[in-house]
Length: 453
Image 1 (spheres, helix red, strand yellow):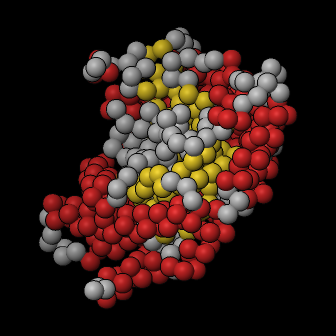
Image 2: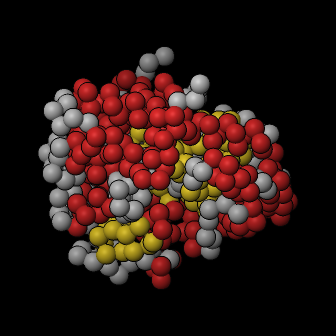
């Protein structure tokens, strides 16, 4: 028997509280695209992507029309391109990036991720060439996203690569300075990056993934806030956590329905459902708003980290119970520029860089979409990355840094990207020098708990 109340509740979640399928991401292996000639590699990549993804956007639109559930982004993730390019006698990674961009444009997806390298223990020749090409590749493409894994709980932190990536971020921003350094917004540094993450800019098709799969990311911070608001004001934190679990269960069920229906129609395997409370700049779709509904005056107040820890845990517990295959990141994102409440908190000085770093110890990802002065030294950016990698390494969790050194802008100014990337105030960073530390190079060894075989 159909439960009428549940139908009404789901409609309300979509129409009133911004519930959406944030992304359907086709994960596609390009390992069979390798060849000695760069033109052959590019031709193989273009043909494979346009073959497998030719109906992704159209079928996603049909699902929206049939079920009235909005799908915000259609995306593709591919095998880390550093691996694919290494097969060439004379690799040209910028040319591969442009091929990815052309294929993404042809099939009508918003972004394509996987212009990536995994260098937590060191770099191969291909890794080095790809990293060197990132600024130019992001400047010459519109839909390509890049990520580099710099650390893991098993390998430690590759500090040589950390410093190189800090410089790469600065260059990516400088080469796109006419667009306020948007190149840096498509580039993320990881510790413990998962190979089935459907969210950009960090999505790639991991080496252990199948030939292709459809991974789905669902988001509903507005729904969670509405559920918390509706709870009795005398409810204790255990009751509040249980309510969040219940609503996360319902959100995940919606996402898995979408993923399985689309995968079946495309005749490919369903991969994972990633339930991550990914906010948008829209009013009412804010993770920071959930903190206020919990009882904090604003994001950044003492207690914010505890509230985020509880929220992240409750979301994971509810999602795991609802989904057959829950993966990716799954939890709560705290991107400053993409969350209306976080933007306000940063503008008012409630949310500082140090508080954001503390919050990353319990959130799904890390320091995300934070605008800083364009003249911030490379060594300071390297120190920020190293701190975040350390949090992920020690806590055996994924952490990331997507930081925006905005060319020509300073504290008190604002950067506006529009769309899901939103807007952000330029935040101050610690003026103390990290140079002598980060320039020592080498690897920070993995913690003792990595020896768990």
